Image (cartoon, rainbow, N blue to C red):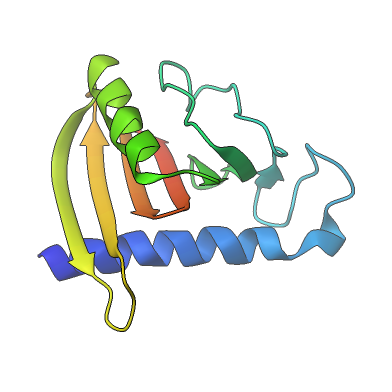
Length: 142
């Protein structure tokens, strides 16, 4: 089960990065890509998905909303382990409980990747963290 969740987190990170890689279709923040993906820019987004979710430390490298699939993804860089730990505590203070968390030493690397699923009953948050970078996937629970 842990491998499955870790693979889903990695897949979300890859999908998010690849969705943001086609910059030719984006002329400015707010443009809609095919499939309902809206590029939100490089600031912590304020929308129905992030309402009540603390802003992450570090630098937002990209943020999108997929209106067809109903999620917001945010990628943050320039973040260290202490900031990650503080952010997880801030999510807990905001009412988010950890559903499942896994960590795995990445073969051939000198770090551990962490995947965490959280929920407050209204939103689900999936976080994938490696030192220096974090991917956040937020969706509403129907």
